[in-house]
Length: 266
Image (cartoon, rainbow, N blue to C red; front, side, top):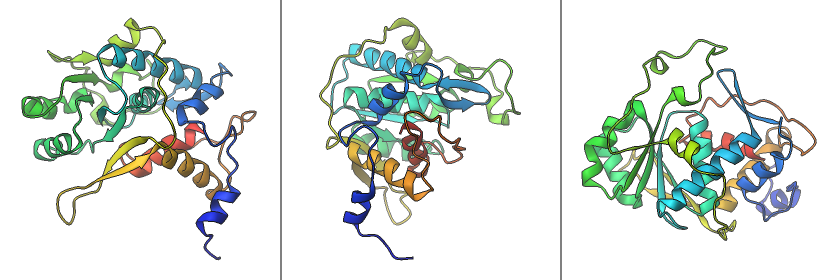
């Protein structure tokens, strides 16, 4: 097997709707089929239409809270639909997505929030206390809290992990994600966001020193999804096909988990 050069790889890509479309654009296109399923979360089937609408609602809310293109939004989450909604909403406003390992403790979290300049964070309720312990020491303006229970079905189709059993927790001086999705209409402002814009700030593991932030453009995400789809046997969805089902076992805040997010988007 020979290695393909970058030119050969790019020449072999077939962007379904052109090279200028963002990931949120693919989701909106697939949402034209109201029954097309994007995610299955313990038996709850979430359609592309729902993902698109919820991310529109969240983008509208974030804009109302004063967040604008280029602002940094941290996501401190376990795997679940909330991360996908947050990633898409941020892209629609041109926010830079800062992924944070949910295993981080206070020292690691504070370093990454300070280094990235994040002023907004979406966090799982179970790990909110870690954020609460450092919020006064960081530049965090708003904290949006969510829970596994926000999107779990009433009757899960598989046993829940023990960490998912505790009841939903609510904290003072925070904002509930579901409240935003309920209160705001899916009417975000039009923001000129391009593939060449700074879209992601991912951090190294820090095994040889302090973690280092790596800048990724929106094009990196789209190209990774398209190229990766072909590399893994043509799993890229076509508009007229429901596509294969992928198990998202990697942490959604890790580059491997983000790759799965990009794949389901296209």
